Amino acid sequence: MRALGIETSCDETAVAIVRRDANGHAVIEAETVLSQIDDHAPFGGVVPEIAARAHVDHLDHLITATLNEAKLSPQDLDCIAATAGPGLIGGVLVGLVTGRAMASAIGVPFIPVNHLEGHALSPRLSEHVPFPYLLFLVSGGHTQILCVEGVGQYERWGTTLDDALGEAFDKTAKLLELGFPGGPAVERMAESGDADRFQLPLPLKGKQGCDFSFAGLKTALRLTAEKHAPLSDQTVADLCASFQRSVGETIKDRMASALTRFSDRYTSPPVLVAAGGVAANKAIRAVLDDLISARQGRLVIPPAHHCTDNAAMIAWAALEREAAHLPRFEPSARPRWPLD
Ligand code: KG4
Ligand code: ZN
Image (cartoon, rainbow, N blue to C red):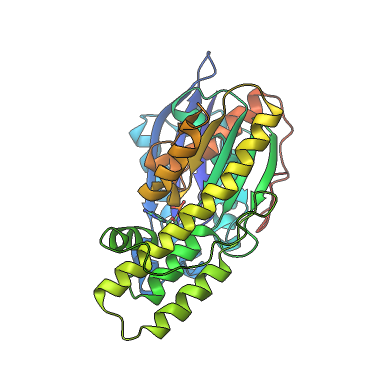
């Protein structure tokens, strides 16, 4: 079965054509993605209306380009899948309406996909990662620990009580005037900083459960920065390094609790998948690596272009659900749509 996937829930317009072969493995026949980072950079964050308009401007060209790259015509497709949420509603509507219209014109089923399910199954796009595994999803919009037990079987063990981690990186960068997106800029500055100079809080450390909170850390960072104004380059670097250290220690504490819960439930060594833009951060990867090596488990980080928002994961989630004979969702756009 072959699906064309559409992803428009945030600031990436993406289209992919994916086939599920006889062994149940993914074959990516073509994928294209257009990032809107330059459109949003002047505002220091994603502006929903600009995002929606950019999806309208580019989506149809990307669909044509993806079909051409795969040397396929619309009649070669078995279904069309599009993100139906969660996400910025204007963008979600663009992808959903386009996908539905295309499916109806070709005469194939339209399959609405939960964007989070796309992320949850994304490691299986490039290698056969067996169930169950833990997913640490850290992006600009999400910070979640999910236990992925099978296709359509997800338990959310942890989530953020306030900001997403990527958002915390972006707000830190904005405060320190490092530009957008903030994560890579903060990581770069942290390399020349002293992580021990500022003792920032470790939110929820030692508390039961696997939830996160970053609002207190953000406020502490702002107050510290204000106290040291005007900021020298070295102080900015020290603030970034101290922020990253607090984030790392928080992740270590929260994830340790998730891994313990995993080991209480399953006898197999833990498999931890990290996805989302923040998973690119080397300091965070090192923390996850340490945690998982200590438990003789395996850390899987999909290739960068499948860690961030992409359409291959949307097409693939649709194919996995169809193969598992799961019911199709209602084709309506949802700004919020938890997985479990
Ligand atoms: O998954 P993603 O590309 O898009 C969505 O949010 O859906 O994630 C983007 C987020 C941004 O907040 C960005 O600042 C963060 O991921 N990010 C990073 C790094 N690279 C991207 N955060 C920390 N360290 C990085 N190296
Ligand atoms: Zn995403």
